[in-house]
Each structure stands twice: as structure tokens, then as C-alpha cells.
Amino acid sequence: MIVQIELAQSGDALGAHASSRSAHSPGERVKPSIFQYDYLVLNALSADVRRLIAATPPGASRALDLGADKSPYRALLEARGLDVKTLDVSPDSGADYQGTVESTGLPDESFDVVLCTQVLEHCNDPFRGIQEIRRILAPGGHAIVSVPHVWFFHPHPRDHWRFTQQGLARLCESAGLEMRMLLGQGGSMLAAAQVASFLAYGILRGAGAPLYAVANVAGMLLDRLIRNELFCINFACLARKRDR
Picture 1 (cartoon, one colour):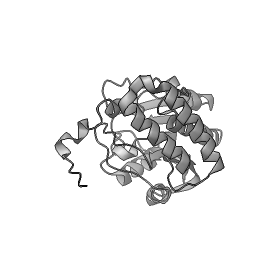
Picture 2: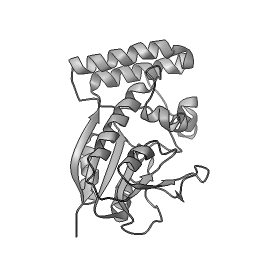
Picture 3: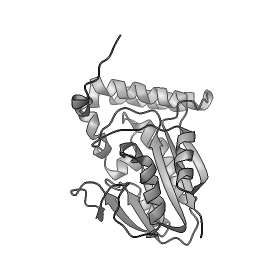
């Protein structure tokens, strides 16, 4: 079977899924409902972002949520005593700054912590993006970065990249960021259950909530019993900018 892709029409290929990045409130992203079709990805990512934020050293005061959208993890950063600013590409987002990951327009060494979740796949040049994150980090500052490995096409407004664990490590190393912790969100069983729920959502939408709950519970149980990390949903890391 040959599938021919029309690039001019690919931005509309998934209909409602194309706007899923902003479909949930911050609370629903940090603590999703078991009845959500994307519960597995959101729950796993939220748990690991929480863990990575908790691993940042005390004493930091300035944080940037880069590509913030609705800044779902703001409360977690503020609980660490951080003053949180936000940056988003959209002028209607309500963010403190407007810009892109590759070009924030912010001064050098402005922040002690930069949080960048599920953004680099939308960059034209993720290597340039990670260099920009390093530039705005203070010496000794930390970047918390998450990227997709197994996920559907979701243009916001473009969707260019997927990353392996080695790819994310290479990306950080290319900018001179020292990897301190690398986490995978779920294993192959969790990823398979999440893909199944995603496919069902394309047909059932909200009416499939009970089915999503069953798939979510089954995915978590099977992931614990049959651990295989060849197909993680996402990867997230904590990387440090070396002191001068």
C-alpha cells in the first residue's frame, strides 16, 4: 500500500487533534482524569516534570517557562521559590514575552531555570533552540526539557521532529549542557495503550471516556509487568549549564 502525503494539506490532517496542545486547562494537564484519552502521556510527563523540578538545587530565583502556552507547571516552579516568567510564540497567549525557542529576544544569563516541555519538535532548528536556552541560562543554571518520541503529528503551527534518548542527550551536549538526569515517560506497553486510546478518540471523541479509562489502567499495569523501553512516549531531562 502506498500512502501519498500532500504537504499543503497536512496541517489539517488530524482535525481537532491539531489544537490539542491547548485543549486542556493547566490543572487537567498536571492532574489529568483517568477518563481522558491522553491521560497516559500527560500523567507520565507531569510526574517526571515534577521530579525534575524537585531535583533543581535550592537558591535559584528566576525561571522561564519557554513555549509556555498556559504554563501548566507554574505552580510547581513557584513551590520551589522561583519567580516564573513565560514566553510563547502567540501574541494572544497572555505570556510575559513573545518569541520562539530559537529567538527569545531575552538578555544573556537571565534565568536560573528554563522549562521547555514539548516545544522543540515544533522548531525549525532544535540545535539552535537548545543553544538559545543555554544563552539565557545563568552559569550553573538548569534546563528542564521534554520531547516526544512516539506521538502523533500535531502541527502548532508545524511539527518537524521526534527524538530518541540518545538524540536528546546529543542535543544538550551540543550546546554544552551537562546532562544530570534523563527520564523516559512509560515503556512500550504504555505507548501502545496510549496509541490505542488516540485511535479510538479519532472515532468516539468524548463518548469513548469509559474505554479510555480501561485502556489507561491496562496500559499502566502492563507497563509495570512487561517493562520495555524501546517505545517511550516522551523523554525528559535535567541539564546544567557549567559554571564559568
